[in-house]
Amino acid sequence: MSAFRGRPLLMVAAATVMLLVSGCSATIAPDPNAAAPGEAPRAGESTPPATASDKGSAGAATGEDPAGSGAETTTSATGSVTAEEHRAALAKTVDQQLTCGGGSLEITEFAVRVEVTDDCDTIVVTGSSVMVLAQNVKTLVVDGFSTDALVAAVDAVRVTSNGSSTTVRWESGTPSVEDAGFASDLRLSEFAR
View 1 (cartoon, rainbow, N blue to C red):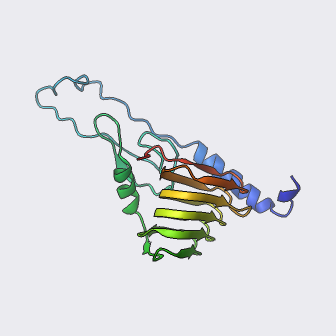
View 2: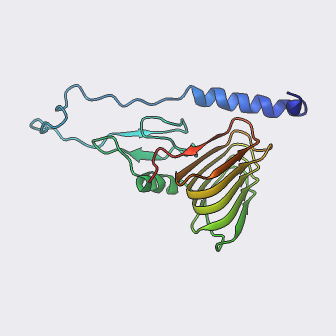
View 3: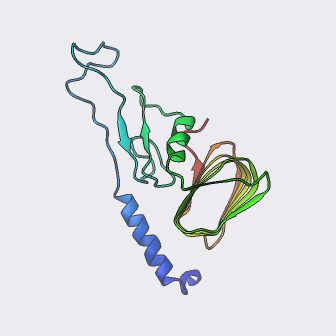
């Protein structure tokens, strides 16, 4: 507990974010007038795909949105969303597209949504309230507050002691994970390829 003595404001902010996010949910209820699964639509009815907006609540009806982007993800009649569809929905919310040329990239901005369009050796996030949508990354280091990242694949994920309220999802692979942060959620995406 002595590690948090100099950080009461950080603790209050993290607790507030956790309380706000934990109360969010979405539900998709079937239309009681719709045809049963496998049954043709009734005369005059259509069966559009169900949609729900995931305002950052992990695991909501359309699946997690690691960035809290509010991106709307459309589900098929079976309720499945592909990794490509989820990634495309998140890509529509980005503020900037960056490249690393296969090397290293540091993201220092505050409250920004970034798409890294090529594979990187290392991505370091030191900014706060950052959403990162990346391709294949050898090492992802999070050293900022409230970072949300979705990577296609990653070999190593490292969250430093400054990395609080961090969410990282990877679509494939089994990276090594080193987590010294507070309130981290690091795991395979439910939209894994």
